[in-house]
Each structure stands twice: as structure tokens, then as C-alpha cells.
Amino acid sequence: MFKTNHYFDGKVTSIAFQTETLPATVGVMAQGDYEFGTSQKEYMTVTSGSLTVKLPGADNWVTFKQGETFTVEANQTFQVKADVESAYLCLYE
Amino acid sequence: MFKTNHYFDGKVTSIAFQTETLPATVGVMAQGDYEFGTSQKEYMTVTSGSLTVKLPGADNWVTFKQGETFTVEANQTFQVKADVESAYLCLYE
Image (cartoon, rainbow over all chains, first blue to last red; front, top):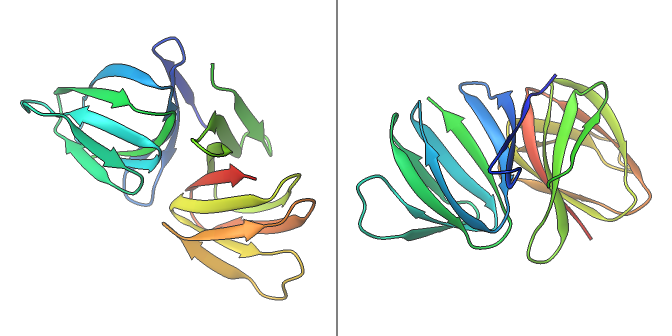
């Protein structure tokens, strides 16, 4: 009933669901480096662990910890380092 | 690489992972009523939506919203109503 998705040889795994307002996923990332592309605006909240992120057009890496959120516009790519095995909630606008 | 689990005909779906300190799952629940049993002490945090919970031995139902956590000791059963499609993070001690 819920769709699971596996990316990067399963190092990133997510479950799609629907919040009251927006489609969403919860997921986990193994420690490692990833590049993601967006097709919609994404609001990504770290729910466990720590993600160090290079946002589109940014020169610097910024670390987001549990409870912190970053936003990526549609049709962008961004880079993520999972500093430890981490979990996230992503909302799609 | 990450194990996914499906309960209640897939109405509850989770992904197991490892935090820096404890084993954990992230999961989603369809709207509905569930009874869960614990084998370890569980710390359950609502990350999206709202869960109304009758804890072991409790007379009353209590609603936990996004960002709120409840704890269940090992070898207990507890009841959960997912008021809307909801997501959670569960740590196992």
C-alpha cells in the first residue's frame, strides 16, 4: 500500500506517503556522498543523524542536524554527505 | 541494504536503520487503529501527522503530534489510532 523506493544500490531507501497537505517521503541514508535532483520544490527535514549539504549555487557546505530543515527549488541538483546513518522527512510542493 | 517491513496488510511500513546510539526505524501509518507489542523499550516520535495512543495500563487516550515523543517499556502492548496518514521515528533500547 505504501511504495518503497531504493536509490544508490539501496544506500538511500524511502517510503512515500501523503501528509494532510503535501505528498512526502520518509527515508534513510547510509553514511556516504550523494547527488540528488528535484522535480518539485522539496522541504527536507533531518529526523535522525546529520546531513551536510551543498545547496544549488552554494559555495559552502552546511550541516543540518536532527530537527533542522533545508529547502531546494524544483529542477535543481544538490549534494548531500550523510555524516552518519541518517533519516529524513521530505515534503514535495 | 536497509530492510523494509510491512505490517497490517502494508498499512504500516517501516525501514530499519542504525542511529549513532540505538537501532531505529522510520515508518508510516495509514489512517486507522493498530495494536503493537514491544520486545524492547521503544521511544516513538511523531515526525508527521498525529497519533492518538493508549499506553500500557492507561485509561485515557493521549494525542501526540509532530515532534512529540512517547515511551513504551519492553514486553508491553499499546494501541494507536493514526488520526491522519502519519510518520514516525522509533528508537529501540
